[in-house]
Image 1 (cartoon, helix red, strand yellow):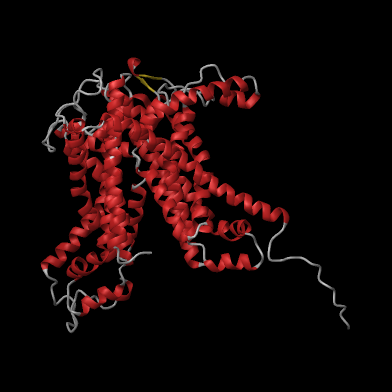
Image 2 (cartoon, chains in turn blue, cyan):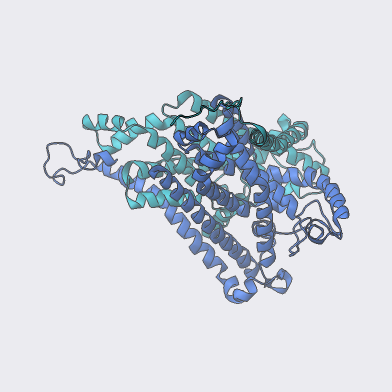
Length: 329
Length: 298
């Protein structure tokens, strides 16, 4: 710890030369074990890249840059283009974010600014419950109950909007399905709400009380206080929280695999069936016995890893920076 | 200069008036509405899983020795092998990940201090929590399963990789709360750093560490994606977690959810209720430990 830096407690007082006294073996052993456990994190991250790159090099070398980002995924013809999966991943995650972000920020503000601490507890428990329901259970519920129910709603929305310029493309069309980009987005919204809420709440809670009181003293209403004192302070951190939610949404596998409809197509129609990167890996891995097919799926995994790591690096960087600024202020 | 005293108009300054007030109230209502919207899917899913799952669950369902083919209706066999598989695989994962995670947190907080390496490890373990679970499954597939074959152990490795950063983060938060005066007190008595950490710092933080670990285990118990590449879901009990294909509740639900048969779907609901029950029990125990045994909290 910082206060102990000058006098290393491990070398007992009285010994002028710290090297004269050898620390007991157990003490050094424990330190090495702790260091090894800490380094394990870095080792795992590096090994993920190395092993998956090795196993997928076949795909990268045969397909080439053009083949990887082509739109045809046809294992029978040995064509493995990932564009449709990438498209589905991005579209469903963005839909999820658009729905989840206002709700998460609303609940976070409710917890920090509106409800007294005592009453906040049960609300936090409820949000945590949402996080504990396993992904596969959301998927099971989504495909057996939600999707058939949504199909009717989608169908009536689509018939009402057919022909309307922009909305007709997004929500219209003759082939609406219960399992679609939009259903996947809805399920993703439910699944990322807990993490975005709790991270935003942590950030908002760090806003100094004096800022809030200052705003109130100027006669601000609670909402004006939030806009004027809380928001400028926590903006950066909340953006970070949203990005972390985006990373989660892109990597979510099982629930999306069950409700996105599983057909690799690129279309502007949100109520049509689609596919996503993790869903493709999960659903096609069993049948992928051939060399290039399997290496393409592992390559998709590596691709997903790089994508989510980048999103998370940026997000954590933003959170860290805004936290540091907050401490400085 | 004589100042003419302007008689103040009768304005009540205690309450903001008009649009500002309405806007404030509107926003408060919207915040509550956000919470209600969150409640809707949660309520729906819990009610469905409980009502559909309760019909499927029986003693025989939880303990039968083999999972029947999808075409068979509910009543013959059950999810016994999957229950055993989930408990074994998650338990083994916890045995691997909890000690490593706590040790990692000890390194970051007790040894690394303000050094760059500790900061970097802490940062990267935060980033690692964002690695999708399916990537961990593929990782263990490429590094372990390709060489040693499918097994419950491989599944445990994948779950342990997922749990590790979460446990590091939560344990680190707890260790940070232990006041320095405790450490300094025991250094003053001549204890070595390892001894201080194990006998003074850890016991002071143990409540939070245990409850954080339990929450990580509860999350891991429900994971599906890392298991489909590592345990190769089978239909009979594999009591040896270290070798041979295994099965788990989550992967069975995933397989059954894609099946058109009513019996398979009913078994999926039963398995879902079992899985949620396991996760909730762990979560409640964690809450209890937090409330009862946490000495220092934020």
